[in-house]
Amino acid sequence: MTKDILLITGDFGEDYDVMVPYQALEMVGHNVDVVCPDKEAGDRIKTSIHDFRGDQTYMEDRGHDFELNATLADVDPAEYDALYLPGGRAPEYLRTYDEVLETVRHFFDANKPVGALCHGQHILSAADVVEGYEITSFPGLRSECEAAGCAAWVDEVTRDGNLVTAQGWDDHPEILSIFLEMLGTEVRHEEEVAPADD
Image (tube, rainbow, N blue to C red; front, side, top):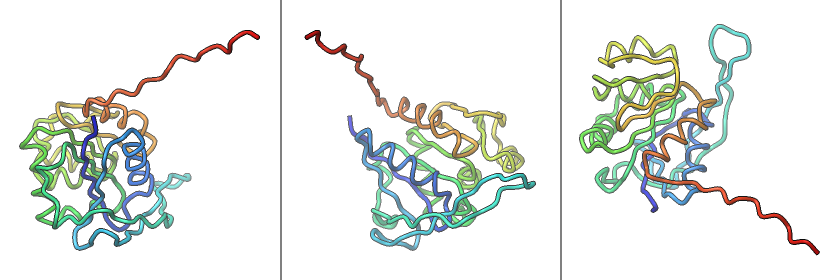
């Protein structure tokens, strides 16, 4: 059954965190609306690529442009089945928008599936929705998550109730698998059929 998913990101969201969930969820038949405050459908956001290359923290390169396909001001969160929050630098400023925080709170109030990756937990913490949840995040956000009242910060992909969280883009296979399970999406692989004998 097709689900409608809202993905909130913005300029310099992590390239993989935006592209991979968007493409994977669309690939299995879901509708994903990607929005950013102060931008409209058809506008483009710039993404960034973060990677560790032996330094004490990640480095950042310019990623792709991504075309938004919906307008946050026009969406009604009640019409969506789930929410996905990518990481990157965008969550640092997205958490300052009341409309973003109110939208996030809707999904928790309605107990709908929420996925959050890497720095997406900036938004969860600012929305005051992590209290009592076991979560993970980019490790540098651990103290912020704890200060926001999470029950425990866990060093791996973590599902607690309606929320699944992960640390970075290398966790995509696991977080997306769990998110699809939360959506009730079943991906089946047909058994290989042996070729007929001549």
